[in-house]
Image (tube, rainbow, N blue to C red):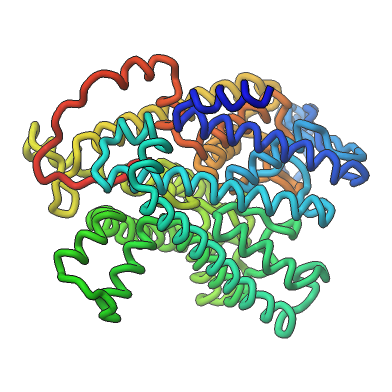
Amino acid sequence: MFNKVKSLLFKLNAAELSIATFVIASLIGAFALVITEKDTTFIKYYPVTEFVTVKPEVTEPSPDLHLYELREEHVFLREEETKGISFLDAWFTSVSALCVTGLTSIDFSEFTSLGQFVVMLLIQAGGLGIIVFTSIFALAIFRGLSERIALRNLMSSVLNSHSQDVWDMLKYVAFYTFAFEFLATIIMGIHLQFFADPELINNANPWWWALFHSVSAFNNAGFGLNSNNLVNFLHDPVINTVIASLIILGGLGYPVLIFISIWFREKILGRHNGTEKELKKDLSGVASLVQVKVALIGTFLLIALGTLLPLIVEIDNPILDGLSVPEKIMASVFQSVSTRTAGFNTIDIGGLHIATIFLYIGLMFVGANPAGTAGGIKIPTMAVLYGYIKDWFRQPGLPVTVLGRRISKFAVSHAIRLFFFSIIYIVVVVYLITTIEHDYLITPDPLFNFTKVLFEVVSAFGTVGLSMGFRDGVSSFSTILSDASKVLIIITMLFGRLGPLTILESLPGRKTATKSPLSPDFENSDQIQIG
């Protein structure tokens, strides 16, 4: 039996192996959570529809008042106390953790300590697992392998041909992951132990709270131990700064972090013994300069955009009442950083204006950078698409340029496929869920509406974890969806984490297509990782 499984695994390409690994790991995590939460009591919510009579406000009674009364159908929630966690909710939580998303279909704050530990392991495994695959993929590209070879024979080609490079990459990944998480745990642990009110973490162990949120934040997972996520820390600059920094570092991507580390160590500290040419060769073996610039500039611009626009729109929002101007800015900056990929929130997302919600949907769709812990279609994808459109209007038929550099035509084609395939996927899933939930999608209804469905689907696709939630609820909007819709959200989280290009590469028809020869690339073009 073992030999058959082993033989089957060796026949899988990298894309198929990634999918199989995540699915199997998510099922193992689900069974573990069913065991750890078998004695936990949860509150389940179910939507029901009722007719409500709406009367107009009048200053004087009138015999014709009944003519103006309206009967509207609205959605309400029915609560039910249950013992233990269903397999579907356990699988939903396991997939959300493994895909570092943060959406929940049940109140995660009620989980046992052992269940929380299982979720933290799944977050760490999911973050490191996809990073290892995408980092090796990035290394394969920048070491000169074609993208098709890198996708088709990823592990065998790279591990056999560049085993030392892969080992160095994995050492960097492990070092940065545990170093950043350890440092953040120390800072937040000390702060919570000696300077913060224990009520903010519901009198939990401050060091466990700090460790869990460090792992969750660096892996851009968005899971929090408090029922209201990080709303209790709206006024706390230390927690806001540490969590936001971890999110940004995890979202930059390891090739970019390694590039910056090598450049700083060898260029600024002067620890490089070779020539300038050798230094450039070392750097180009990790990531192209244009990818690093796109990552840094794109991250800054999106954070600025996600800070300024909501700050203008929400300046008088009642949910920000009582905050000083600096605190409003801090809240806006934190939410901008978190919205693109992490899913933490210090304010009530469901209480924001539609303009801000629409902007956040766009930020979640874009995400951060490849070969990191972030989701979305990624910043380089948008940069390449912008360059493609810009250059098509100016000089159609010539190589696409980004920041003055020619971009590989393979990166351009990948970006176009990724963008349109992602849009099509989101449209299909939103349509299916709105069809399944049509009994509750009554317009207008503040509890159950199309905006919440779209927001939830994009959040799942971008592995963000933000949710507009529901009235009196302490979990995601997915909680009140039907089982069929929850399965679609689960598939969307897996789809978004593995990436549309990985899914496409795993399709049966691709095995035949990858045997065809590649056309030559443009001369002096730079590689840039997409997706």
